[in-house]
Image (cartoon, rainbow, N blue to C red; front, side):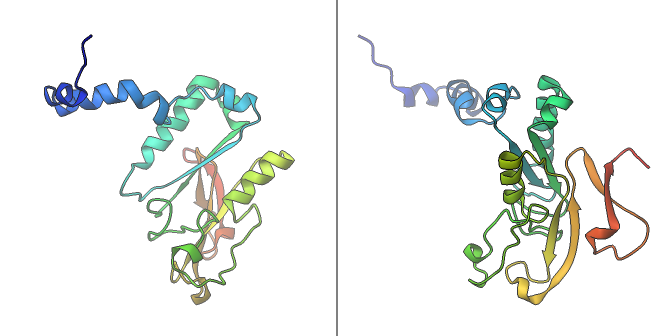
Length: 194
């Protein structure tokens, strides 16, 4: 019987080859890159993904590329029936950043904010509520309003701006009049539309 020493095997290969070997052995189980979501959809699954354009850890384009691969694999109409992607301008990794970065995706009190912070629970301002509404009532989410507070961890100091997060590939476009810090003055449209 031959007993292999995995540690010794990895020492004899380049770091790039070791990473490739590890990805081949475990990647399918831990990476969320399979664009075939038919089984998920068949079980009634609904997926809302979001990403901050200013995420310093993971490029937003990686999430957009994944969404596009799902569309290429399953078709646009089928994908839009159970998947939404929102990309938040100016948001860092899941929260914070210079842009509107709060839409119910985090518990502000749990991040060090005051314990009595009211979190909007309506589906137009809370991505979790939008998902629940989609699953339980069949109402697909449209734009979700994101808020940038004067102090991100203390909403009691006031709102700096709001902006609609539009289902990708739409983006928020300024209507041309009104306060640019007010979501009401934006409309969701495809980036290539006038």
